[in-house]
Length: 337
Image: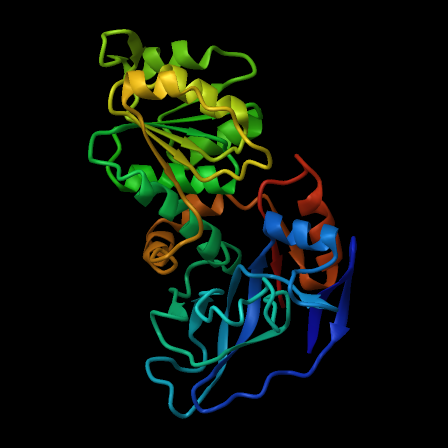
């Protein structure tokens, strides 16, 4: 079979490798789609994934079709459409340092267990949408970490795939108002398409003033005026987001951080104290990997908006290049014939 390997700093190659052999507790999945993550670009740029040495397989956002089932595996049959948990085996992460990557024609799910290592997704969900399962689990975990309540007013900073997924998650959790902030008009259009109640272009508008206009007024413990927003989610990883949120936060507001900050960010503890802000961070998806599968199945048309580009596996190198260029794409998915 063919598989994509990182061969060195900035280098990738499609190479022939042995098709995996299925053991009694394993399942072989024919890949039908795999999303490209920002971490894939990072792995390529640095030439691999420590501590693994040599050629490194990549791809950890898989969706595919079961083609062989081990004799001891239950609940799965040939032909099932599935999404896969790439971190189910902590010792052999798929596409992130383990011996397999999902940018391959086939993927072996070792010690396959329905509901732990893979889940069935309805056949009506397009493959490129099913491949969103892993990043949408990241978004759902961010939502869960901020503990939204029905009726909450939420603002999401960053309308990339995680921010858009979080916007969907907040609406499904009962938020009364979800506002999405970004500087790219096309992404703000997508935010409205997935169900955001309003958007703010922070390059052109005063975010605080618009939040007060949209979500009403609040106050600090000492009565200083603030926005009525209950939850702020940083899905952008930009220092200005933290500053803006803390200056706008009312008493008891929550600030969640899922965006990756590449450098230390100064924090105004006076603003935190004045508003008694709760700050939570979010990483990965401890329990959400298949929680989000049913949400995608039920609302796949909304999730489909997140995909901006699809490339056939024959053009996988172009897909990786496109995904690595800032602003060139929102979500790139590689599909397999």
